[in-house]
Length: 591
Image (cartoon, rainbow, N blue to C red; front, side, top):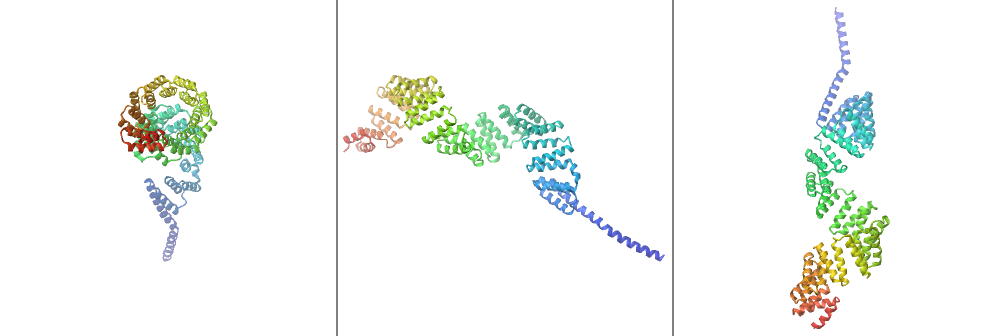
């Protein structure tokens, strides 16, 4: 009995030792599993709270304790995706499928991995993953719609439309209809695109993008500006803080020439984000439409500072500078645009005209000749070459160019007016009147044509006809100061009071017209109104200092007023400038 007890005791001890040795790994695994599970729970909790970097850390700690679990790599891949580190996400997807090959038959694996490929711009690989996902789950509307989106990014539009259609056939969603509409619009199938936008809006009437994009279709392709405005307005109501929608409203209102309304929408957009390229550009267009050119220039300057890649903005700014008489600045901007678009004849023509305005005739001639070489069918190119040569007093060359302009366009009254003034310089008076008759025949409402014919009749000493034409010119345009001035010069001898009234009208219209002040002063002098004459002469001289005629006239009237000392000073200045009348009068009156 003792032996048995002893044997039993020994056996029990051996059994307990054996049990203890064998049970150590089991207890260790239980503890390890609990630690890993705890890390997973913390990772998942942080993931749900969008603390992706912490989630990644906990998953990494879990993998450090147990690298044999494929699902840990898969979960960390999801965290990397959410964190934006798609390269590491792809590494984890690769590791997961290496550990557990069953993932090769998992729809979720390929569907989820496709996002990382797409986010890295590898749309081909994303499509390959979705191909596998679709094989595993043929009625996955999201796999089709996403594959359609990636094909769209690769400009494979027709195949993309097929995928969107398959997705819609399974279950129509607003997103799939929206993207199919975008593609149909891109391919020019506008009516079908409209049908899809309408269906997308029925499914989700609270999505501002649907209304905004339909508005773009109405505006850009269907030219239905009223419907476009209603859609943009609805989109704005749904998403009042989205500047893209406000910018579309601003741009549309510019196109509808509702520039004040455009500025309101642009101001709202600028108030939200402080000003971006689009809203500043569109507001500059609105100011341009309202002829507020300085404000337009300020906005386009700011827009170009934000984005100087759009060379057409430099062309627009050049127009503004030209309007504001900054011709040299306009030429600089035209140069920037033309450095990228050297064959744009429209802008070449504008630059040529800018050269003409600043009297840079050499460059203007080169530009216009280049334009004629590119396309010799534009009569304006020949017209401006004619004007340039006229200003250079090369009247024969000027005549050749204006004849070519008239050959190309025989219904422009300005061409005949120009040829008339050329023929006047060439002493061909008969042709002068013929051309002016033709100009008036083409456009009998043009005040300049009547003025010019009146001017020519005056030079030909046909004063009655001259007055008739000048009166007609003034009737057509009561603000045309040159017609009053010319009429005044004809009336000076026979009707001095009426002539004086004409010069007064010129001064009302153009307060910087020195000739009008001087001529009115001459009439007052002849009428014996010496003090008033002196005042007009002084105003003329203030406008154009050191003009010898005005100095001479002042000296003459000062003699009449008995101010000999002042008269002699002014007569001396005039004679030094070459006025012979002043010299002779000075010799008579001054010691």
